[in-house]
Amino acid sequence: MASKRLSWKTLRKCAACFCMTLGFAGICAAQEGSFNATGAEKPLLLPEISLEAKPASNTLWADSAAAEPSPPPRYTWNDYRWEIEAGVTFVRFQSSIFYASMVGFKSSVAYHLNDWISAEGGVTTGFAPTIFDNEHVKYVDYMAGIRVGPHRGRLEPWAHVMVGGAHLLPQTAGNSQNAFAMRAGIGTDYRLNPVLSLRVEADYLRTQFFSQSQNNFQLATGAVFHF
Image 1 (cartoon, one colour):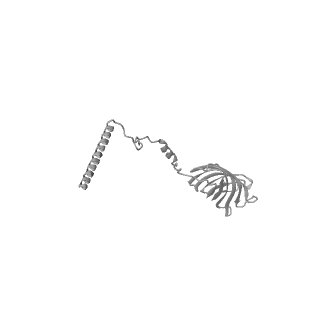
Image 2 (image 1 turned 135 degrees about the horizontal axis):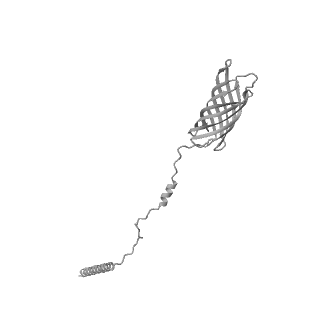
Image 3 (image 1 turned 90 degrees about the vertical axis):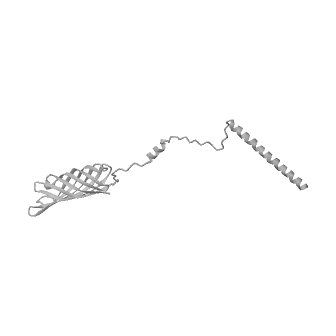
């Protein structure tokens, strides 16, 4: 009987605890409903995140556009100081002793002192058919001077003045084979690329053979190598 009484007491206690639990849950639910009914907002545990779109700044685009390198020029010329010319020439020589139309070779070396002025030196040769008693006409001059003209473009016009000496064959009686010579003229270089140009040139040529002055001209064309 004692065990039965103990079990009944235990059952009554469990039932009482169950009823108390249900009552407490009902009170909590009623309070939560009244809280929502008043319209009070619940506190946020996380910070609010704004989804509003902001206008993009033009500064970033301006910086990126400014950072882009400008396209290189179509033609660029390196700063070469030296040049060597090699070409052909036509020299028309007239004097009181004989006339001759000579074809030969022309070479020159120039050093660019700056963008406009160059120091220049060169040698010109000329050869003509025989005169007199099968005497061949041979001419050579060697001169140095100054050339003026731009060095920074595809088309480079220039002018120069050169002085030096000349040697002429055949030997004539009582006259020297050597004489003073001077050349002044104009020309232009057409730049194919930074290291190669084509040149045309026309010069006034003055010599002092036979104790006289000769006023002649010379035409030349050739290639110019820059280095």
